[in-house]
Image (cartoon, rainbow, N blue to C red; front, side, top):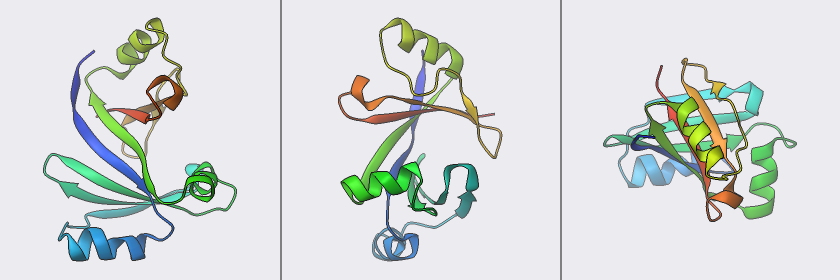
Length: 134
């Protein structure tokens, strides 16, 4: 299992436009992309920080998982995403180690990337996203 880098840190926000006042305007990070992900009922903004990114995540439906997370825990860090060489191999190794996986097989993202989530109960309260570039 080779973790290449922290790909991004996901931050749940009530309103991306309001959050951009901090990350883009005050910190001077460049907003490179905003996209909707209908199957997850979210809007996402990407702000590169060196080799990694900050990902702002806003719910677009009141009954989505992100909306429920926001209602329960409020705004803040939601997950850390680690870029890996081989996501299937990494998931298999984590399962052998007794880790609880949210996704036993990777999902396919809009840009062809593969991603999967590890249950935070197995990672000391941190939701880990694994990511493999296409």
